[in-house]
Image (cartoon, rainbow, N blue to C red; front, side, top):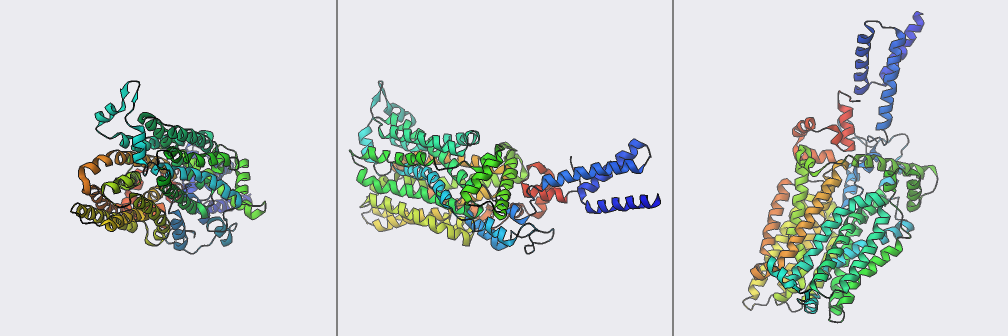
Length: 629
């Protein structure tokens, strides 16, 4: 009997050693205390073993739930921390993380070289994250179909720029049912043309707000299919407009469709792409938009005539029709299928677009992606409001930084160029306004390509400062040239140089970085709400610039870009003092940079664990002395 008792005690001691974690030890203490009170001092070996067995089962359940995926695993950690968005500049973030060794295991005191788990090899990590999962033929077709929406967004942003005079003369101030549109214009003290142009941003705001719930309800593929049909009908309505009011309505509808595309296209690309291509597809999405802008400006002169302007507006329908036709070859988002519980179909589609076979290695990668999708989707179900973001001390500052950067991006005046550059050059007496507009659009494309490498080398904050100061300097150069032109000093080359530098500096920093930083400043729980709110502010500022620039240009004359110079100067100061560097950093490191280690500990006492992103919550639970069941 003594031997049996000793054996049992040794077994319990071994089990306790194996479960020597703060959670289980705390639970064991509570269980022992509860048992002593209930049994009133009776301590039979049988009852104590029963309690310990229940504790062990509960601890095992917690470990199993927490290990799918195990966020301490290096590869799963990076998979869960990278947003499921195709974001311009994300490639530099991934490369920086690779260089800094963020795929290595983290210990409590230092980051050590990678010692991957038994079921993962270095080759597996490399394949899943950094380049061996390339762009398969099926993925290429799917991406091409989705990018039609991005091209259409860029095209319709700038399509009214060059043929402004022709469309104005054809629409005029016609009356509808005895009510003159000119009365509305006089009430709001703005030009009818400014309303036609800026209403596009109002539609974008509406569309980007309606898109998320619809995407979650009917799926990504179906949403893009119906949005393509809606875009086609809206463009045909625009091309057949016979009055200002019908043009305004059609531009509102096109803006709604484009707003839907700005949400659905990067989301869809990010969810179907392997980790190694997510940033590249974000850059490709940006390229598609700026190519659409360039195409609209190139076709503006040959088709911007009394006979051809309707064809110019209708060309956008070609891209939406292609998107609808290619939807036959597109696949549903595996991540959306995971949220609906259809893991089998999600796995089948992942194997299809990855070009993977049924061997064990490919299956392991696929299952790892599916596990990450499931965990991140569960995180995002914990919906939080904008008010919660503002009230929470750990997310208030990142949220305000994101909103401020979006406002700086639009109030820098870049869309005044894409909306009104032709009329601006005409009023500045530039020899060939069409040439100036095309050159600005061309520089826009080139600078978009250069931005990727610069974001990789220089980082986010330095580029924001350089970009803002460069735009400020370019605006002043442009202003000087315009002022001198009033005194019959022809400096057309200086004018166009100022404008081209202005566009180039925007595209290397203030254009792409606000979107990248906003995604990097938040965890999975906060990201959707934060990016949605920042996107809304971006559309509102876009509308205000489009609505007010014609009046501002008429009132200020050659000094029209001085307000933009002031805004970009403030943006440079703000970025240098407030914006954290996020390149290659984890969310925890970014927050420590923003608040400091001591302040982070203080904030951690006030932030509920459930509101933290996956990795931070795991670390909080692991390091805590208490467990909540």
